[in-house]
Length: 203
Length: 203
Image (cartoon, rainbow over all chains, first blue to last red; front, side):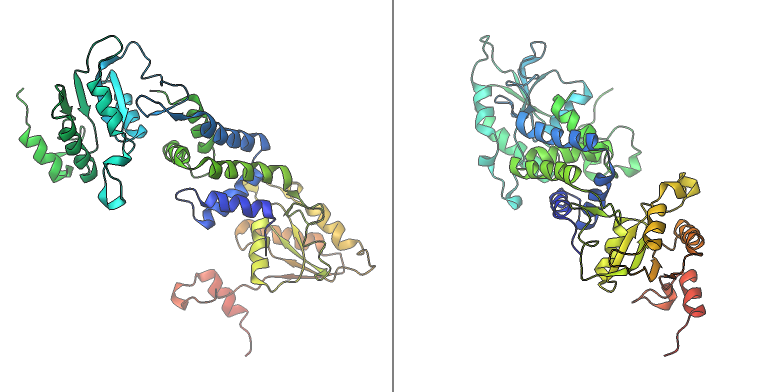
């Protein structure tokens, strides 16, 4: 039995989304058939709008609908500190902490030989240029915070960046490792515990 | 931190789909940002196409892009047998068995007092009219196969239909219940086993 072509097309397109097999795509397609047209039209136009209007900021490479993005053009943020992250999601995680008030630089991934991602695939040259060149007001970048993940790929990227930055007179920092907040010691992984002990602080 | 409005809109629209919370909608939105525009445009146009071009067949109430649908207008199918199902999905399940070669009637649900679905919410009047009225070639409906589910709602709908059909001179049948094919006896539910024993067949 064949569905009408329009339904087959929809199922095939939905099945390309991550985490949707053919069966759940079919279920979703029948759900969509039952929803009001206005709701589905809104979804379709939201899909088209992100593809049409969202691009990468030419300065920090975060997603944005203006260029430079709102973070890069916000005069209240400290231009002399750059936080380097792997992805726009990581940027969001840091932003939602509300602590960091500098600028960002999104690498667009982490060095991962297993996935075939090398340094040339990341926005590294731009970062070095941003760090080396004076800012429009003549001041210089004071600090580069390497906020890559604590996965092996993230750590490898961090080391690579450290090497790139070693001849530039700028302070390079990385996120503190240690106990996750709100967790019993018995559940903390060995790696975090090791870092927490090694870098214990005086109180 | 705020995403650009377009991304927020997309997340909100995706989060309305079943099984997608805000977190998975966000993950999906970022996936969509990374996909080629052509792929997302195809998805958007597939969404719009089903809402624009798919409607209910005026005869059997299945989803269709023509009226009457291809099943209702197929001259090779037996017009004198009507299989009554709850939903288009159930129709597909029966069609994919390849056994049934008659016509269908989709009720649009099952009677379910708990969900507030009563007989007036289903396409029952049309069904009775189809069964009572002679076919265009003058012949009459010979058999109505009640293929509602074996859930309590399905069984209730089946009883209700039996009652509606009792004064019409037509053969009324229902799907056989019994052992699911390809299952060890130890895993079969008690209800199926009871039916399998009660309606055991001579071989």
